[in-house]
Image 1 (cartoon, rainbow, N blue to C red):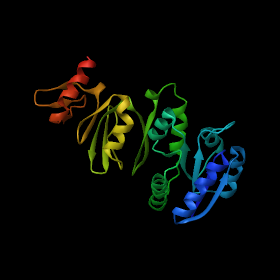
Image 2: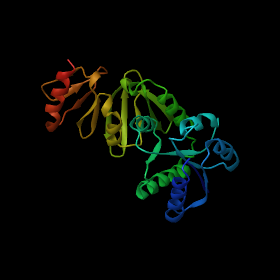
Image 3: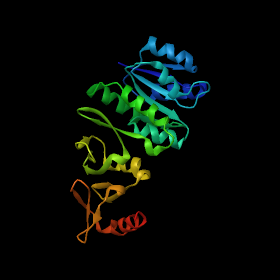
Image 4: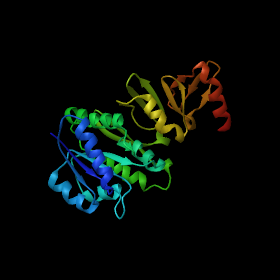
Length: 250
C-alpha cells in the first residue's frame, strides 16, 4: 500500500499535485494534503505515510526544519521546490529525489515509480540520507558536502576530496578512494559526473571520471596515474581538455 502525504503551504500547489497523482499514477491507496507544517508533524505520526512529498520553501518552518523535527521515521521523501541551486545540489549529494515546480508530469511519474520499485525491492528508510542532507545544508559551502553512496552493504558517505576516481560499467559506477576500499553503486557515471563536475572532477573517457587534485602524472601513452598506483586511459578527444585542466592546476 502506497500512502502519500503532500505538504505544501500553498493550497493550490498541494491540490494540483494531488490531482496529478490521482489522475495519472496507479497503485496509490490514499493521498492526503496538508498546508501547515506544524500540523504535518502530527499528521505524519497518525497517517504513517510511505511517501512524503514535501515543499522546501515554507514560512516559519521549511521542509528541512520539518524533517529535523520528525524524529525517526520510515517513509521516503520527494522534495518539491522552485529552483534553488544550493538546496538542489545538497539533495543530489544525498541521493534523494526532488521535483521542480511547476511539476512536470513525466518527472512526477518517474519519481513515484522509483519510490514504488525501491519499496518493493529495498524497503529501507531514507532517514540516514535525510540526516546527511541536513548536515550538508549546515555546511558553509558545497565543498564540504558528503556524497551518499548506496550499496548492497548499506549507505556510505564521503567528501568529494576523498574520491580518487569513478569508473562506469553500464548502470553501475565503481568508486575508488584515497584510504578506503572501493565501492560499487547502482547509478550511472553520467549522474555522478553531473553531481561532481563543480568539485574538480572531469570526464576523461566514456568510462572514467577523475578527481584532478589526485592526478600524479599524465604519461606519453595517454594514461593518468593516481596515488594508489592505478591508471586510466584518456580518450583522444579529451586529451586537450585534460592538458588544459592540468596546466591550470600546476
